[in-house]
Amino acid sequence: MDKRSQRTRDALLEAMVVLMQEKPWEAITIREICEEADIARSTFYIHFAGKSELQEYGLRFLELELRAMPTSRSLDEDGKLGHLPCILQIMMAPQHQFLFKDAQSSPAASLARSKMSAVAFDLIENEIRSSRYFGQNSELSIHFIAAGVQMAVHQWHQQSVESGLGLMLEELDGIISRTLQDTRLLTS
Image 1 (cartoon, rainbow, N blue to C red):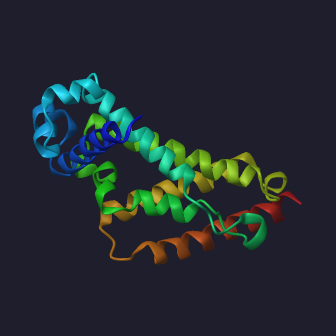
Image 2 (image 1 turned 45 degrees about the vertical axis):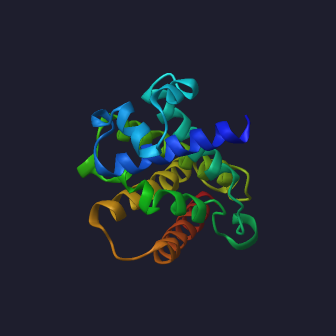
């Protein structure tokens, strides 16, 4: 894709995110997206067949961004999930809060939240499976950890907790470490 096309798609995606912070996806029109992006409606249709295709593009973009984020930690080296800071950074970013707040929930936001949660779940599960902890922990504990991260982020958004990413990461690291250690002791 050439740079101009990429800039246009990026502008439309950014406009979509801005508008979704203000109102439900179903209430947003293509005209509003184009006005926010300062792009002609005909140009929108050169790049996307409709709003749903733009939303899918945005979700793929977020997924690729999350999967490509470098990790500086490792379960095997320091007992900490490498992808966890990346997952929290994406899920707790102010521009993504509309995906996780129930008050602004819409079918489109629920679908987006579900897809992002599935990506986070997959990253956590695969990381545990490829670590030395895999043979020592049950499937249930792996799923418990992955689901627990999602629920912690959900609770953080619902309660508008003042703690930031660092505190959330520290607390989750402790819970995950204890869960992996406790389960390993139970299965030995």
